[in-house]
Amino acid sequence: MVAPGPLRYEPDSGIALLTLTDPPMNLVTLELTRALDAALDAVERDGARVVILTGAGERAFCAGSDIGEFPDLMRPGAVVERKLRRQNEVFTRLERLPVPTIAALGGLAYGGGLELAACCDLIIAEPQVRVGLPEIKLGLFPGSGGTYRVTRRIGRGRAKQLMFFGDPVDASTALSWGLLDEVVERGGALAAARERADVLRRRPRTSLRLVKSLIDATADEPDEEVLRRSLAASDEAFTSAEAREGVRAFFAKETPDFDTGR
Image (cartoon, rainbow, N blue to C red; front, top):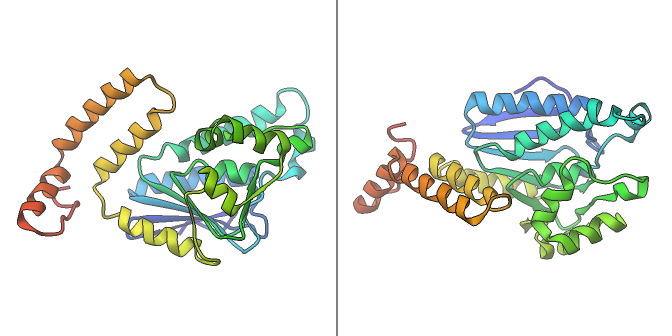
């Protein structure tokens, strides 16, 4: 477990749990960005197969940036050089992890908190959760990926509604829009994320990595390039030790052990 601070890292049987540990709001601060970067180092070093991201306390997964840091950043170039450039680099690093990532929301996710959750492959929330991008009410806009990661999830019209007005939406609405992937019973988000992660950690690592990269590529690349990548990835998957084990187990009527031969 990584030392105490604004984020705790706990590895367990191939599942890495990252917990924002500054309740009640678990704000995105410069310190949190550094801690998340260090935790991602640990995730890669330990070879985690699945990552879960959650927040301590019941009020918020993450309520966004610490506005207390803003006055020192309100001169030309300061917010980019001292906050947003590094924050975007670390958020993108989370998004591009080659393993499945799950955000478990037991409280609100506003601003940078929603941008952080949107870096994950799946977002599981509880019914009382509200999500939003309220930056417009401060004369700002989502500067850490919200304009494109959230838009990819819900489409341009709903993204503009969310960002133009800055009003949060409830879990039911967010689910219907595709901003959330699943809503579970109150108090159950982390347990549900662990359950999904336990299934995913037993899936073949190579195939998960390849399918994630191909799905993500569809947002940015022309069909011809996606097809080229898909064919190359198919060749890699079909020649992997995991595929040989999957086929062997199928004919033997056994459960495949995808760590065999690795």
